[in-house]
Picture 1 (cartoon, rainbow, N blue to C red):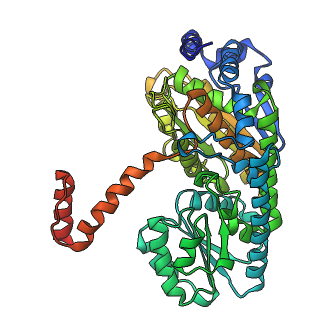
Picture 2: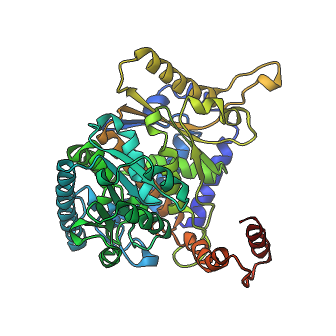
Picture 3: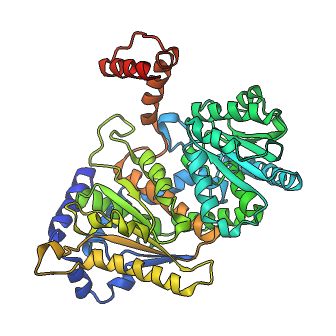
Length: 506
């Protein structure tokens, strides 16, 4: 089947179902709630409130097979150059699992093993030191992944270290932070693959001067020479590699502060959870593959139903940062409008990812989800067993989780149109047995693999991010005009006017 006919078949199925309510789909298939669900270890997912039926699913699974999804997984795990524009592999799976075959994957795993050993030794040294506070300085994947994991797994921390994060060029943050810390009991970890990231180095300069020496200065980078030139001793530099993108780097030494927070054994359990999902994604056929189901639901909503956003709604405050983490993972990976050969993408690609934790979000944007003019598909995420003893509170939280999914799907009629709920809002429900290092690792890896499947279906490269470069280049060219305080030639008339306004106010 050619790509054009594939998308035509998808459109045909969507047109057939566009006016069929979810309630009708559920009523006509008593086994749907069971048949449209999967479990992988501690992660359960239910897709029965997605607006497709068995026939449409057959078309979607056919698309996955025609696009070569199983072979694409094999190619990624084995270290083939799936990142074509940068002519390199995408081997984040080698950071946590031994599933790749061939010399490339094997060599990567050997490097990873050595890095993990060095990371563990560094953790042991810091635990034996007088350091009480650790500052992680990074941006993008060098911040979002570690920050999410530290927050999500806070119940596994022994309190040995207080972990802090600095992630942008606003010096107000570092100014406030250093006022609260003892420089003699603080370690700073600079995380940057290139060690040329402006925001990281600006904060690094401030913190290096504040520390007064390099005894507690560390780095995680692929550019050892730059880190050494900055003043980080070689024995305090942990590696990154060009075959791991920043948004996929949590599993590497980028997770140093995670290991410091929850202990190295629990960090290994995080890796093991991801490895379990890796094995599932690589070995299961599309029809029983959780990552493929999730990707196909996204493609169905984006291209079949024309829904261009997706909400992520974790009903556990420990996962409050998950929507932000997934914004980068999904939108940096899939925010492409051309294919590797330079031709336009055949269909719309990346959905806009947003969201927030329940139940607090119910009192902000849920009004729009229930009664707004735009239908927003949602991923609900709940945790069956909490890490606290307050059963009544958790029962209430879970009742809201279940109620919101039901209300969005089924709606409610009312004589007053203002009080009616249209329903028919699609969602997927994820339930974790508990929020542990293993379950968090599995959940994040599932989203990674879903993103890859979507990229294969859309024929785009999920592993480059050229779109972030233009703004950086313009900022570099504008910095002299901002810093000088005098008028300098600027081509863009609006920017010139804004610079004049800034000069008059500074």
